[in-house]
Length: 159
Image 1: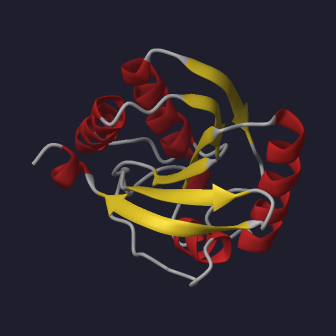
Image 2: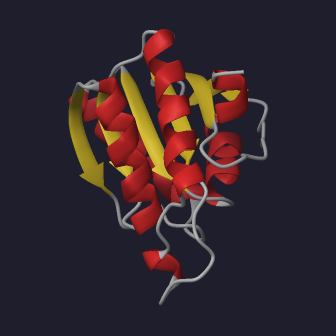
């Protein structure tokens, strides 16, 4: 199966709380550029998992709009910036075994996205994500580990 881990697009710095920070216009464009790369690379998703934070929800909205078809969308309360990558890994193993997902997209935040890629890969690759970057992992659900394939930023997606 394939797991795609995406950081949200650029967000405003001022908001009533971290969870309520909206995307900037640049952040919306970044999300759409990365989504266009996913379309051009012929990716569709069985499920998109999204952080409840506003900027991640808005990123997912823009990505799904460009993709046009997504099997399911599910908000997960435990994929916010300071959550535990091991817990997310355990959840993905459990849900993907039951649901038989072949391709999933997870939209979240730094530093969780970097820790999660390390947690999911054999060699513990820990990339630093620019806003709206997407990491691709070829994941072996039987071995519960995968191989890091690439990290694409919005600039590279349409550069």
